[in-house]
Image (tube, rainbow, N blue to C red; front, side, top):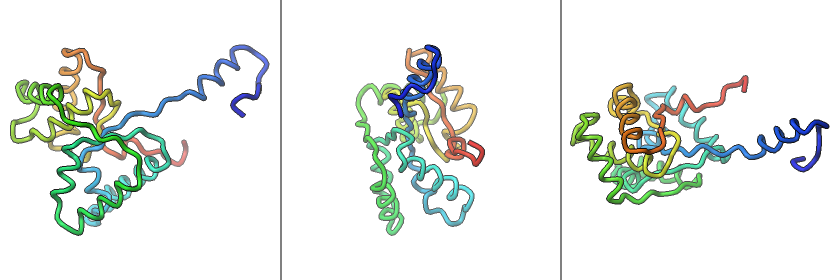
Length: 180
């Protein structure tokens, strides 16, 4: 179907070609997303996370996590660790290595007062996503990540350091609704 000419005008042919080249959004998943895959005490969050997971499994996003994410997952107690590992094995993803550039941006987040030094892992999640040109950080962490102070602070970091802007959303924002 991609090679068939469905319309006679040149403009329509161009539109067909553009539709065929839609790039996947690059999303960075922080650890809170994995935790909500099996969070029975929060059924709404769990349902939204599972719905996002289905979209990820269907290949709708290019997924990234970092070494921080894998370390945090490995530090979970059983059986939660095994449950999250099983979910992780269901999807394709890239693991980002934490390097000096990521550490430098994480420190800038702290120096600007966006987050405190005790939240260095959250700063590293943000920095890894920024350095690797992700489009969106996906998190349920409203205290440290998904809030206006952090979002505006991260925007200032990306602009002042000439990085691509990045959005920070809860998983529910990425969900397709029935009318789409």
